[in-house]
Length: 122
Image (cartoon, rainbow, N blue to C red):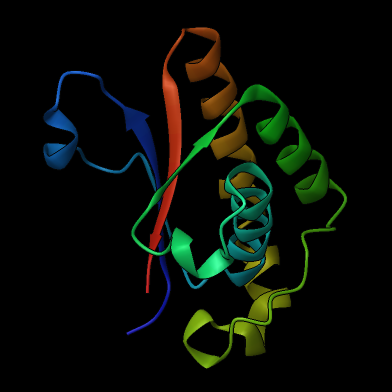
């Protein structure tokens, strides 16, 4: 039990249920805190509503994320034990390369007119 996070391309052909995630994170609570803040800003809904929902990411979102990752400035999570908040600094450090690879992948996908989605489940 805990926080599982995914990023993938959203297809408009209804085949989304069969998709495989292009990026998967486990208990990367600082990334989740960033996504929750963005979700609330975009939708006006509380962060809890992001659970099992889709957050469509735009170029500006990816640019902001990349800057935060490079500056080691992802926001602190208050998500609790199941989000891995007790080791969030270590998890952020361990995920830096994957986070940057995700940003590069997402920028490329967006340039090619694809829709990039972040989702999570806890």
